Length: 131
Image (cartoon, rainbow, N blue to C red; front, side, top):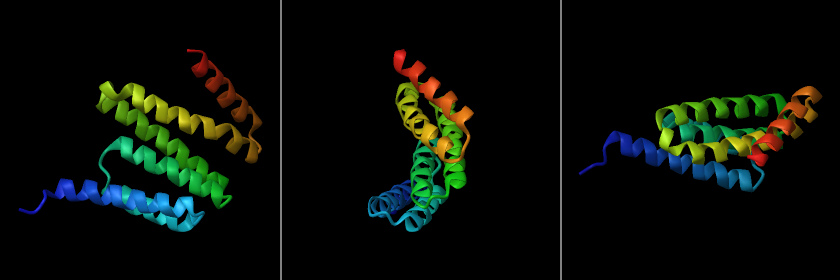
């Protein structure tokens, strides 16, 4: 029997994600983004999509395309919000992923010259860490 199309899509999403991670690890940022784009085309799960967008943000930073990286990170946060809405039982896990994104934003906003936003996220991270 052939796997269901949904199973194939999930497997392809994970495979392209893993390939993207391999490129990211080797600092081949443009290829990483292309692989993550392929992963996104097969991914239905918003948690996976958020993780993929987060990795695209890291690759965008590697390319020194800070505006693009910021867009990827902000889109990742939207996907994580969707993931929490669709599966409230995973909120704690998703919140850990959100924190990973939050921790990348202050330095990115600093590089973009947006010091007010940098401070906002620094304060937000401090507040989360106190909880």
